[in-house]
Image 1: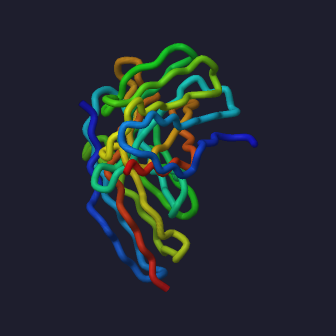
Image 2 (image 1 turned 45 degrees about the vertical axis):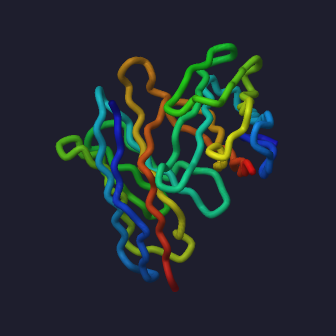
Length: 115
Length: 110
C-alpha cells in the first residue's frame, strides 16, 4: 500500500536559518506529491505540489522537487521566518485503482522558528 | 460564506451519546472526506464520498457513520461516542486531486 515517511520533529530553528524537512514515499503507479501546512488552531492548507517526476513545486519561498529515483519530496526554505512556525505534512495521491483523490499523509513535522 | 465550513467548532459530549459533526462546502466538489487528527498518528481517513449517495470506508471507520444526500453536505455521526474518539476532526473536499480543509471540530468525549 501507499505510505509516507517524514522526519520526526519537533524542529526548532532561529530566524533566517535554512530549513529541510525530509519526506520519502512508497506508492503504486505515478503519485502526485503535496506539502500541506497547518498553523495553530487551523485546518490544513496546501503549500505546494508536484505531479510528475522532476517537477519542482514552490510557494512562499518553500520548494520541493519530486525525485522518483529516490522516492523523495523534501521541503526546503532558504530563510525561515517566525511566521513559518507550523506543522508541515507531506502527502501523496496515487493514481492507481481510480482512487486518485485520496491522500496518504505523513505524521507531520512541527517547526518552531525563534526570533 | 464561500469555502468549507464545519460545525460545531468545539463539542464536549458524554460516553454513549450520539453526536453529529457537520461539514458544508460551497464549491460543488464531488469528493469529500473526513479525517481525524491525533498526536503521533497524523491524519487518518475515516470515510470519504465520491458523490452524493456514494460513500466508502477509509482507514479507521469503526464507530462512525456518514451520509451524503446533497453534494454540499457530508455529516459524520458518532453513534455511541467513546473516549477513544476524542480527537480533532477535519472535513475536506477535493478538486483535481487537491484537498481543501475545513477549520476542524475539536471533540472531547468524557
